Length: 83
Image (cartoon, rainbow, N blue to C red):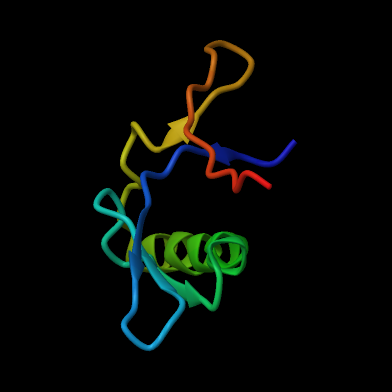
C-alpha cells in the first residue's frame, strides 16, 4: 500500500481563468488547472515532485502530513460541484 498524505490546499481563482493550487503546509507544492477538477487532479503529480525534493534534500516531511490509515481515521475536506 502506498503512503497517504493529508495536505491542506488553497485554490486561488486566477483573473485569466483557472485556478492555482498551493499548500500552506508544503510551500513547495504549486500547480494549476483550468477548472477545480483539473487543478485538484494535478495535485498528485505536484505532491510527488515535492516529496522528491524533500527526499533529495534530506528534509523530513512534516509529521502531520503523513497519515496512517491502519491506526487512525483520516478526516478530510472534499470539493464537490453540485449539479
